[in-house]
Length: 637
Image 1 (cartoon, rainbow, N blue to C red):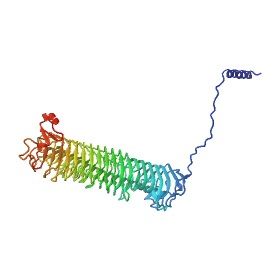
Image 2: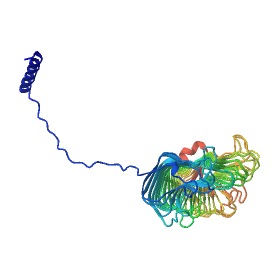
Image 3: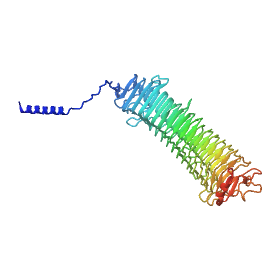
Image 4: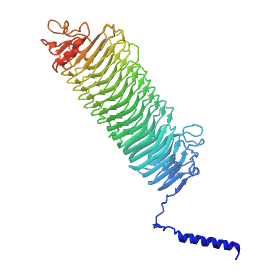
C-alpha cells in the first residue's frame, strides 16, 4: 500500500476510536414550518419626464388605481400660461415622488400653474417623499399653487374626498398657495412644509388653506417666511374644519405689506371650526407693514383646545392697526388654553394697540398662560389679557408682567394694563399675577395690574398686582394694583395683594399723580363690590413726590355700598385720628390733603369708619393684628 494511503487510513481509524470513546451529544432538529413569503409590491407605474405633454392640460394624468413613482425630476416644457403638471384622477393611488421634484421648465409659457392636483371626490390617495418648486432653474416663479387636493375643472371632480394622506412633501415659492383643499373626510398631513411662498403684487399668499375638513390630523408641518408685498398673508387658514388634532405646527416669520399677516386663522363660512386640539403650535415673528399682525385668530369657532403653544414677537408698523398675539371673537366659546405664551409682541406705529390675549368670547379657560413683555410706542394701549363681553371664563395662574408703553410723548391713550375686563361678567381670575407693567407717556395715563369696567360679578382671588408704574413726573398719571370702574357691580377682590405700585420716578411725582392698591374709580359708584383679606402695602409717589398714594380708595360721590373685610393697608398714611371731620367723614366729596391707607370720598351720613378700621402705628401692628375682630380692617401707619 502506498505510504500516503496508509497514513490516511491510520488517521481515519484514530478519529473513529475517539468518536467511540467520546460520543457527540444528540441534536434536536427543529421542525421546519411552511411560511408564506412576504412580498413588497413593486412600483407598477414609473413616470418619466418625457411622459409629460408639452401642450395638454394636465401634462400627465393618473387615470387608474395603482402605485406610481417618479424616475427623475419632472421638468418639461409647458406651452400654455396656466396648467397643471400632474393630475391624480383615480382612487386607490399611491404616488411616491422618490425624493424627486416637480420643477417648471425654464422654457415654455407656464406662469400660473399647479404642481399636483387630486380630483375632488376621490379616495384613498397617498402622496409622499418629494418636492414641488414653483421657480424654474432661472428663478422665475411659474406655479400659483403647489398642491390642490380638490381639483374640479380638469377632472369634473365633485362631492367629498376620503382618506387623503400627504407625507414628507415640501413646497416652496408658489405665488399664492402652498397646499389647498376642501370637502375631505379624513385628511392626514405629516412632515410637510410650505415655506417661502411669495407674491410681489396684490395677491394674498397662504401656506396652507383647508376648508370643510372632517377629521383633520396634521403633524410636523412648517409654513414659514411666506410674503405678500401688496396684500395679506396667512401661514395656515382653516375654515369649517371639524374634529382632529394639529401637532408641531409652525407658522412663523410670515409678512404682508398690504393686508393682515396671520400665523394661524381658524375661520367660519358656515359651521366654523370645532373640536380641534392644537398642541405645540409656534406662530411667532409674523409682521405687517400696513395692517394688523396676528399670531392666532379664532373666529366663530368652538371647542378649540390649545396646549403648549407660542404666539410671540408678532408686530406691525402700520399706523392705526393692531397686534393680536391671540384673538378669540364672534362667540368662539368653550376654548381651552394651557401653558400658552403671548410674549414680546410689539408695535412702533401711531395709535396701534397691542394685545397679548384678546378674549372676546365666553366660557373659555386659560391656565398657566403668559402675556409678558408686550410693548407699544404709540398713542394706544398695551394689554396683556383683554376680556370684552366675555361671560363665565376662568383664568387660572396666568401672568401678565412687564408689559410697557415706551413712548415718552404726551400721548393721552398710552395706557398699560395687565388684565383688562370690559362688559365682561361672571369671570374668575384665580392666582393670576400682574407685576411690573409700565407706561412712560408724559400725559395723564393709567397703568394697572387688573382693571374691570362696566362689568358684573367678576371674581379676583389670590391675585398679585405689585410694582406697576406710571413714570411721568410731570403729569396726573395713575398707577394701581386693581381698578374697578364704570359702575362695576357685585365684583369681589379676595385674598389679593396690591403693593409697591408707583407714580413718577423713585423720588418725585406730579402733584396730581395717584398711586393705589385698590381704586374704585368713577363718579358712578361701584355697586355692592367687596374687598376681603387683601394686603395693600406701600403704594407710593416716590420719596419726595408731591402726588398721593392710597391703599384703598372709593371715588364714589354717592354713599358707598362697598364692603371691606379683613384687609391690611400699610405704609400709605394714617386715615382715622386727626383725619376724619366732625361728621366722621373723610372730607366728604373731596379728596384728602395727604396719602391714606383707606379713603371713601362719601362714606355715608352717620357712618363711622372707626367701626370697620382699626388703626395703629407700625410698632404696635403685632398686637393689634391679633386683637381685632375678623371682619375689621387694619390700617398701619
